[in-house]
Length: 222
Image (cartoon, rainbow, N blue to C red):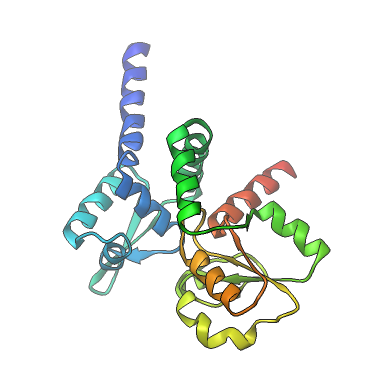
């Protein structure tokens, strides 16, 4: 087979991957699945879409080998195929955040709308923890925390936060994280904590960003 023909076929297969993530709802599905495995029914609620439409999008992702499935009783459970999928989506986000001015504007509008006065990155968290007393809380649903979390973080799901305020110290800075830069759970948590006179700051990065950074650190040490 001619080299040109092989190259064309390889590019054709690669285009299946780029096509699979070209839809905003499929990108959102990957974001949600990066936290833990979910059924179709659960995912449809997370992304506010019908079960039928959610299933169709998942089939596209599965065809491109971006997600895996397994049966649990009457349910089909979807999960991210492997960390290479997370790296790919992270690279797309990073490229978009750096190069597309419209995304900058949207992010700025998002922060203004949510009245975000301060947020920090993972690197900022490490620096702060060396200079002051901090408590890191994970405000995602408990099952996502159990599937994977940043070491040292305490699970206090947003839905439980009001009832668990007495577990939080007044002499420490409370740093809350959830699913990443566009997740609103940590935003709502910070607003509540500030109203209750806690010193609280939102961390833009989430568990997936931490996980990918640990992979990079591991590779650099080899």
